[in-house]
Every structure is written in structure tokens, then in C-alpha cells.
Image (tube, rainbow, N blue to C red; front, side, top):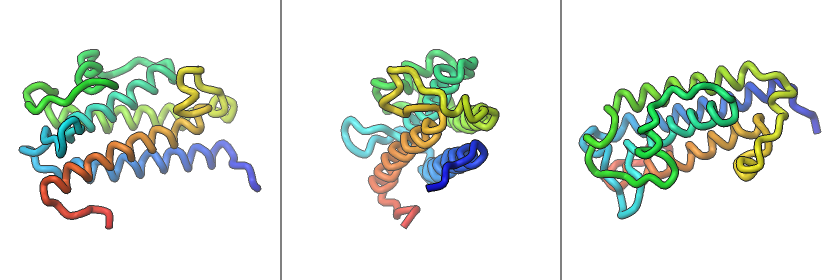
Length: 169
């Protein structure tokens, strides 16, 4: 079996991050503004929470693993962080355009960070508390994309609850 080079690893990881983000944005854009805080079932996540959570996740890894400065307000942690609960009022959240802009900006920063790594940096193990998520920085790209795909699946439930057809087959 051939071993991937640093450039191949970066190319595959970035393509995966870009693909997952593209699919998620298509799903988010398809949800009508008046349904962005609609939970399809009790206890589920709505589109606004999912979008903010994904932006916050990119910010988290950029800060925690990358040692970089975060760009999102600390208030986003209580709104979109793990364990936070959805609120059915759009007034409780930042403006939709601000959330979507944060998704784009944080993903671009994350991709730039990954793209600038050397082979040794990509192979660097993650801390013990992140080992369950990914063993090293190279694998982290796929894990982040998987996490986003998980939440994109929740967006399909929001769409179906609105009577919308499947976007992806």
C-alpha cells in the first residue's frame, strides 16, 4: 500500500472539509428564514443552532489544537457549545448572516492553518482529551468533516419536517 505524501494528505483533508461545508451550506440555504429555529422533534437541534455550533467547532479546534486566537465572541459558547440547548426564538441568537459569515471565515482560517503544516506537524498527536476524536492533526480534518456531516444529517430532518424533498438523492 502506498503511503500518502504531505501534499496528498493536505489535499484530501482540505477537499473533505470543503465538501462537507458545501453540502452544509446548501442545506442551510434551503431552510426558509421562518423555520431556522424550528426543531423537528422535541430535543432536536434547529438550523440556527447547527450553523453556530459548526462555526464554534472550527473556532475551537483552531484555538485548542492550533494555538491560534479565536475570532468568535465568548457568548457563542453558551449559545452553541456542547450541552447548550436550542431556544425557539431567533432573537436569542446572533443574526443569521453573522452566523453564516462566521462559518465561512472560521473554515477558511482552519483550512489555511492545516495547509501551512509540515508533515511532522500533521503527524503530531493530539492531546489525550482529543484522542477519541482524532489521533493526530492529519486525521483531525476528516473528524471535523464527519462532525459536520453528522449535523448536516440533522438539517435533513429539519427539511423533512417542513415537507421538503431530499436534496441529495
